[in-house]
Length: 242
Image 1 (tube, rainbow, N blue to C red):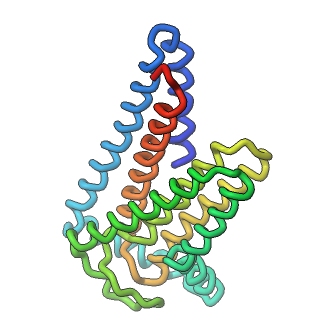
Image 2: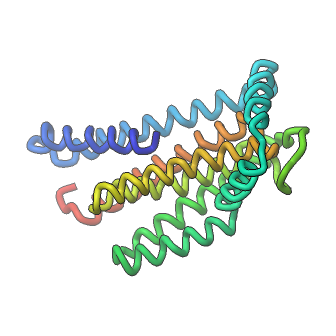
């Protein structure tokens, strides 16, 4: 979803620059910004709509059916896999990936700004998740928890941070000029990781499916918002005509 959205916005911006740039150099940027903000507003609306249905019988039935279906596949091999990926989506996992990202940004790509951008995305996602959890105050599922949990349930912090953090890494890989096979492989693996982290929380019994969906929506909002923000900063810093 992140890759499709990034591609769409980039194509729209390129089209507008080609068609409107000769008349007004700032207009293409403004229109592209408005389109991106439109997606943010739509995402916020979807999150609110989902949040308002948390106590409904329809959503409870949906959560139960999806949860029962996923945990029906429990096995020792799958449990080991999902326990591993759920740890990749916690604080120690992010610390490790963040350290690797910092090394690549400074040594390989020689861009300090990527360190700042990745850190900002992760910080905003984590902070807003804590606020949302306290405000919404949804309890965890009343089933066996295969890993220990201490916080509230909605939205899933693992799903939200995974979509925001690894989703932003997808954006950076999409943006980098590198071997197409390496780029495609990295994007595929990051996408698989995001989905696996989300599913792992249901599989391990610590989240409702709607928690995961809410986390993914909120994380996607932060990805788009931060991409817009960082690109605006870059445009105004480099383009004297804007």
